[in-house]
Image 1 (cartoon, rainbow, N blue to C red):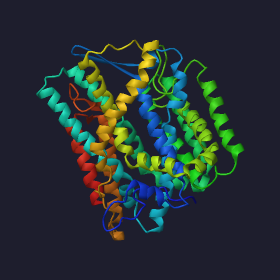
Image 2: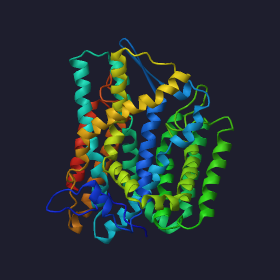
Image 3: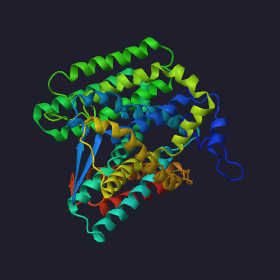
Length: 458
């Protein structure tokens, strides 16, 4: 088994109740720690942030706000999505981390609910703050500033988009112990079954014309990437470079075939004009192939990257990013929205997407957004370092089943709430519903609070 993947910050002991500095954390990292996992986590989030900033074109025309994906207007930009869609790597790293956490929890005699609370806590602390702040901002913009409903809908759904990941990842965490048992019992057959299930969902979806069927692949596709992380945790991928490159080559070949049969978009992020389906929402079998490609490439360069990360400077940078990774992820589209407002207020003309002027403006625009995001992170990163709000506890065996039921119910409520915010934003123009569940932001807030309360009591 590899080194623990618990938070680098949390794994360093505190001295006299004070939190260690990032430099101290970097310098005291155990030699047995797999630093490359932490690098992949930070790298993935960085690519997501810059990818969103590159692709999102937000236009303001008086009271009208519209958003265009650069993929729709810049020919061949879809090629970049084969490298910018790195969420498979994040779920892969999650598989590694959850594998370590499940086994550590079992060794310490912890319950299923203890595992859930430890994994959920750091995700939900900054998310609750993010949702609370944006609920207040949306109410202020509507009730005080009188912002148009449609403009507010576009703005709030744009900044809420990162929360989609939390809904899916919470589902993956909830299933992690069961998926690890499947890995230990049947190994590659579990991965093959998930890939086959994802393909079957696509076939049924296209054959019946019922697009809602595709949403099942939020489970199968992302669990596939997560399952690959178990093989990294147990060392299966560690030493065979031939195996690593074979996985990458298989993924690339599958992508080449799938994106040329006239069904799947060549873009791995959003659909292009004229595409029958998007590969991302809901995910398709193409994301399974992309996961194989990215994981194979990532593992094949692990050795030189690990040597580089042994140096103090690069490792301190990785530690720094991981100490605020949720804040970076949650607030990066808020920085984008603030940047658009600032540019519009300044009356600066925006070059047409894809023009030479637009590409020359990209570095300046990215640097400006980095400054805005740095300010937001400086304010909100503290919520990632608070003490746990879901303390693990011990329960007598007679009450263990009740605790498991409460924790599962709490997780389901958190999944619904985070998914609802991602789909409908923080101030929809009308009360919406999804599968019969109220999606009004205040209803979602109540579900969020109830989910956390159930987890705390479990």
